[in-house]
Length: 390
Ligand SMILES: Cc1ncc(COP(=O)(O)O)c(C=O)c1O
Image (cartoon, rainbow, N blue to C red; front, side):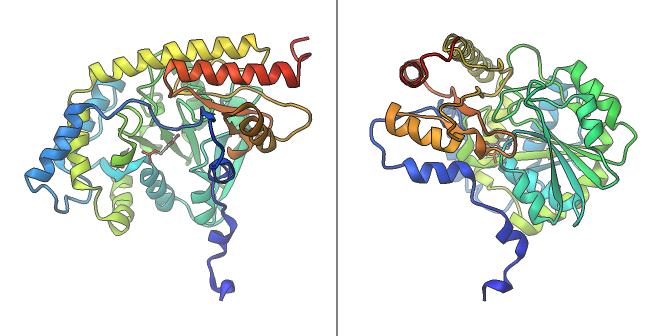
């Protein structure tokens, strides 16, 4: 019977991150610096809004595109913060996490044979969905360009088959983020071309050295851009599963069909909680930004002092140092770090592609945990590679 399966499903793999965790899950006393979600609790008033939704029997299906008040709050949030206006009635879809937003985007626009350009190493959630659609991921190596596209590297990757460019900013796993000027330079390459841009802005609230800009707001790119965001990272709400898409009406109309037949609507209770999150967000988001910035500075300095080659992240809560020892690949090095140093980092090879030779460290942990984990890493490096600083 196996031959009856969809080949595209057989061709995708369980995430490398999961494989790694399955191997190390029994190990005791490990300091883990691996998590992909904030270490804060969901704000109390957001939890309360979810509880109230249950109490008030707001537990039925909602409109497919999400409750109107939440779409209005999303409209207002993008207008106020990112100078972008999307119509609540027709250009916003509330999804089950940013993950579903990515899925409905690809399923709406991709057909077999299309190419999708990705700046790599990159979040592993895009490639399998591209493959499932019968399209082809084209990875641009960004390891020599600050983990970002340059106008040249982007232009060189474009072919007659290019359907979409994925642009995550700030990025998981590298923490790289594009400034307005950098986006303007990329926009010059994309403007006027029949190519979509999937702008993944899920970490837009966690950015340190400049304010977040959406590529949809520069150089008339709005008509070809699908913006993706959500409350998972900004409000420590990963389990609520609320994301959204912002796209022109003609495109949202098509994406809504895929969303409707996929999940009908995002969970009603979570939508009411997200409404509260987006209505009163400033204090919370200012706080997390400040905490993550302090940790970014601390972790970056520690890694530099260990003699490691590392880019200073501009956003999110990850840092991606180069870490190579004794010819081990990053997966085996990750296992050694867990077994011998009792510290867990995510091997760079978990991120397609060009992540080999790197490790992802998450600083979504309390300062004491970060210090202990980094002390262990440093002690291990001093023992295994004492000459590395020379
Ligand atoms: C870049 C990026 N996009 C999307 C997602 C998925 O977000 P959600 O949990 O809202 O589905 C993640 C989660 O880690 C991410 O890092």
